[in-house]
Image (tube, rainbow, N blue to C red):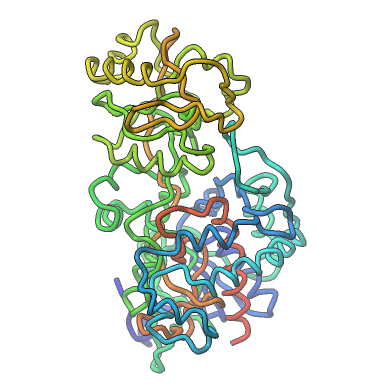
Length: 493
């Protein structure tokens, strides 16, 4: 997989101004924006019409914003706190200067650079207003947790509402859609410009879609590709399945074909945005967000994580990754009968499969397949470390912490001693991969030399911007913002 010069003997399936690869929020934002700029646009989508939209189709579509016109107070700060790893201060110091004068080495550096993040943050209100003008509605939607600390609003109707709002608008503007069609290589013309893509349809036929002005790669990450998961994430990548059906369509071709022509990588290729789900369920986002009120143990019956180090919306990703590193990539959220005293706890569970339940802890261990003797010892040690007295409050960080226990439990530490006992199996679902392509503020893909590759753009999950920890509720915003930037810039070329 790579690129080749455009050949005259290849079948041309379409000749347009802009080719967009992918039909989620990023691809649709790019396609509609380019079409509104008077361009002829072709969208390629691997899925069928009824399953179009990738991850966008299935997301809750949370947005890290105080309101429709203002991003959250910590938006840029959270990106800055997770910009990369052990960055060379002498090199990064150049980011304080004007972006146009950055050295090429800094432009191509794999980190969440402040120019890109600042442009992203400042452009979000415009993107949201544009979506609203196209029929998308926003409002408050509760997060599936008892506690939360991140400012957010949501698309009413979730990601599916975005697909259903923008697709007919694109069609009215003349955008052509080719479903069950997968782009697999970039076409380079005699000047070195990206001039189209090679693609394959459902019948195995191969042809070229030519682009006079640009190609936008908006085809997601690689969570649906077992080979890339093993190569980049490592052995435990085998245990992390996509969080939704849409993720299985994301096989990484957009990233691969760009890297093959010298695109700069960005984002953390060794990690992914994780959510704790029940592996017994086939539902989208069958999350188990109740673990802060219980404990997490592995198959060996041992705790491995501070289940309550903060509000669940800030800790669920770390908990999921910790579960992924256990044997078999499996953990168990163990709870006791006192859970029923907590009003509304059921909304933190999205799996339709009932918990494993038992009258005794020994019976619970046997039913779940947890090593019984170590589990007994873990429970005894945990119960002994729980503080005495009152003060438990499931809706705030209550400070009820264990004493002398490792790992500690920093809040909501109450003994597990009342029947019925129950547990939910938990694995890390792969919401999306972090590794992608380096882009500039106009969504142009940069080469490893830090210069824009002519005619090539990226948006959405294909853009690498996250390191270490996901800045929550920003992925849909990333798709909308960079999709619009790509479509607008390509239209102006």
